[in-house]
Length: 552
Image: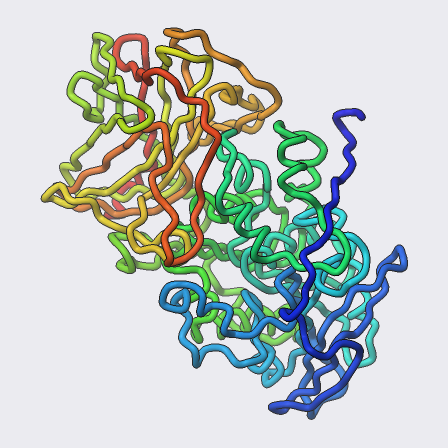
């Protein structure tokens, strides 16, 4: 099989059993002022039928704009889904009704404001026909077909929008790149846009906790589903399979309100921001916050903002949307402390990229490179290298960072590097930030690299953002120093005078799974012997940071 083609591997689905609706088949009910059609069969272009639930205002039969929530978790899933996370994922029970599906817009709210809501069981999930593929261009074709089906229904006004978090956002990138004629607006709320780089292989290192756990808990099917883990093993490099899960973002031209969080690093942060940066839409807005994603999505004031956006593009309502700043970012100081600020673009045009060089003798980050090389060594199983920079004045860092290192291993032919950027207060204590939806002890930013994957794309890489090719492996010889560039994911943090930035380099994950909720982890790792980091002289190891002049 050529590099530009692939075939899916499927496996039997996890039977829905007692988790599915007790009732099946088409039925209509009237509840809470809504007319609800359940298990409506919608034919796809190849004749396969998927099943959807349609919520409409009970007192309005036509001219309805429609929002689609496309996700695999079950169109019947109740609001109690958030209860399995620490503190209900930050979602207050009164914010969602019993009709709300996981990570989806609440039908009760939206129907009361004149919308139809459609919750979907995609192909091959639950009781929909066909075989399921995930985050794929093939799945996006079905999404396209549903949008066009909705547009010609007698109750529709012909304008369709897409809404939802995570998976529901990922598929918005996919379908928008196909340009369905009746897609009027999208609201991707924290959804990655490159499954290889942002979910499966962080810097080339396999992620082996979140994905298997997600597959086990989430995917129910009465037919067959894509064997994701087998496909990952079969496709170690970025090939046609992974291209099918990374839509051509410049093809997107539909109006978009894009929302990301600084704290969803390792899942949605990078891909959501890249979606905004790369899409061609003339009317697009980016908002990046430092809070928990489900809480931010369902917070009443944010739901009102979502409605203003969709009212403008689906109802042609004149409102404040066109006066929104192109970019809103939260400049964080610590967990849940920060200030929102309007900007014209992202990355910020006035950014002053500044090199902080590694002084390996003193374990500091300094403004000028030292004249003589020095090394820092650590055991990747339990050790680390740490480099601190103390700010002499208030300093804001907002945007992309890059860590340039010269590294070697004393044994073996590869290295797995994990990087965290931390903020320290004036007393030297680590300052925590919101992280991965439910955690309150996160970093400023993270980065990863399997050193054999260090080869850069010369076209897509910039001075501040390395872009890895992931086309082959360049193995090491013991004791061989090589230069590498590690992408540190986007962030925004204010450092007060006397506070410090700490860059930590180690050979393992920084965070572990707890009962609070999901987490990422990596393996199997390729570390043996000792890691060596060299800086000084011709070894220009440095951290490039995005200083915002005068912002402090």
